Length: 209
Image (cartoon, rainbow, N blue to C red):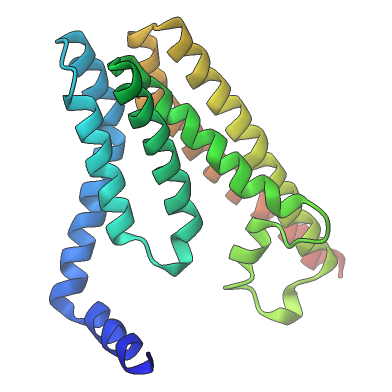
């Protein structure tokens, strides 16, 4: 078992493998960004199988690329793809492809939200602790990480609700615009806003010491 793990680790560090995996990651994220547009034009041109095949390819890429650290994210994407694809094959309706973004938001809500239950360490704190030294993980640091995790949960509720509403309304143009452009802009604003707030809060915390 140890020998197999060692061989796998060496394979991952191989320069050719690393370049190949990097290329596949770019392909996956480009494909994810393009998903709403492809589904929109596929439905507009009455392509019945194209959108679901596109989704399954994306899910397959994520499964191939996923490591132990991203296992939960892989599960979210694969379950969302399975539900959307399963709905398509059961009803033979490509309209089910419109529900994939809202299912991903729901999965991410569960992924983030479960770490807020009881005495669990919030997800943002787990990620931040990889870079923050133990001596800097103060009560303020833990409280801040919990608030950021809660903020992402609120974002996923909002994002998923809007995507679901647009899918149920079958307003494909607005659905494409929101899930393909606006939601990513909002996510970028969340990251930028959190970064600025973090800088200000921790600067103030250091000044107050």
